[in-house]
Length: 91
Image: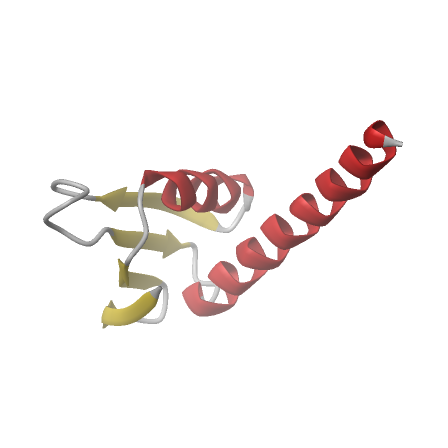
């Protein structure tokens, strides 16, 4: 995975996320939209084999980088919780 900031303002960011697909971007977008400070969270991918997705996030003034960090941490915690429950189910 490779990230490139295409554009950033105080409350908006546009990131190119190379090497990822709808799988990660849909999850990230969903978690971002749960944040009360996020006004818009969306991504664009022309075609999975010929273009890299571009994530766009607009907040109500909160730093968009901090917002994405918070969303990524939330995803990480959710996967940790899932792994714990999954391991118990296998026991």
